[in-house]
Image (cartoon, rainbow, N blue to C red):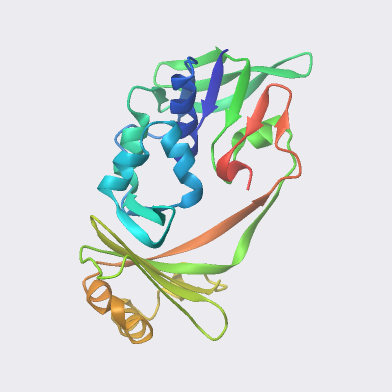
Amino acid sequence: MRVVIVGAGMAGAVLARALVQRGVSPVAIERAPASVEIHGPIMLPYQAFDALDDVGLYEEVRAGGREVPPHRDGRPVAIAVGRQRLLDRVREGLDIRWEHELTGLVTDDSRVTGVTVDGPGGASTIEADIVVGADGARSRVRTLAGIDAEVSVSDTAFIRFRSPVRTDEAFLITFLNDGRQLTVLDWPGGSAGGWQIPRPERGAAEALAPGIEAFRRAFARLLPGATAAVNAATGIFYQEVTEVRCETWWRPGVTLIGEALH
């Protein structure tokens, strides 16, 4: 079977690796250069453990990460690891066409039969029995396939930080009286935290206007266990959340996974 996966992020790479282990040789196309790195941790919930086990990485990831209690049946509820380190490991040995951007879907009798891409060597066509859209919330595969989706920006956003200082607890969380939360995740490379806020009209400019010192003081007051970590933060950044809802996630010859779908 000829499989083309659009997007070599976490969802696309894990799928590609799982297919390789089943004797399929997928082609993943990724518009970013291979040199791009994603900093900070990822918190892998227990729902991800079976997928990691399936591709032979669960024990390795668990040994190299920070376990988040409580434990059930000998397994933690989550594991915190470096996102880039995990991505690099998952991508090992995969056929990834870096700096290739999807330009179109090839169709035959109402079925998708491949993709057209533009890469360093120019335009080309890759034939496929199935095309998988793993290209995120603003999925081009979804748009080109004519799959309807409700795409909106959440009414809440986050002010986040990364710190080289670790915390004693694997995961810290507190809730404000409006239900929003402050969290800090410890991982082998340090810690990372976030403050959930109402999404401001002027976006990042408004959210970050008070400055990092004011953020540090307020965060430490509300979540004292994170004081050392937040005080060592080198900067803060603003993040909005894009929400996607699809009633249908496939057409003949094409399907969606990950954030392209939900």
